[in-house]
Image (cartoon, rainbow over all chains, first blue to last red; front, side, top):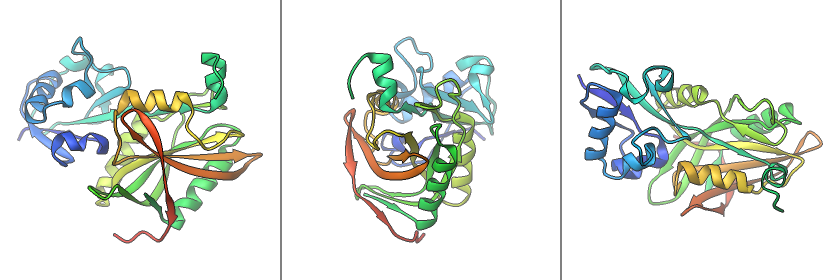
Length: 104
Length: 149
């Protein structure tokens, strides 16, 4: 049984509407490489130009954040679930003015 | 267009008003119909705001809550179709911080709504919803109608 990758709703146009994809690989990184072959364009939404997880993207291996494990080099086994979880954040306009010195 | 179940509307109002004067956030569970741009929300579920230092004017939705709520949605044959958050004593339009953080995660979010509630003096004063298109927020219409699977 391969590894299941859960795709968040806004990235599903890249997975042809599928909410999960079954892929092979020995590490999270290898599974993401397989994901890119299966769903071209996905990798750039998840990883930066250095091939590491983007700042505002989390990857969970089953219930654990891979950053708390061995990052993208965390080993995976058949039956594992990798979930792509966006880091959703924002702020009220007052924060912009304080941070950016701009009017909103 | 965003179609909110009345129960989801009440849940969001209660959550954001009880959280005042801190920002509250949560996820919208429902169904997205591709091609129509229509998101139908069955439930609004609270999530933790991890930004405790700037909770009055900033939120950071707990990724563990995202994972848990996405699993719960899946179990109900639903999906996460958006996020809501409050702007305590500020208008219900996206801030530049909202836009920058959204654009960093998604370029476009046709399947995803950003719902903002203005909470003024502890009461929801306005509510507007937005969709990210090529890195820019466009407002969408909101209707209150019972969710039908």
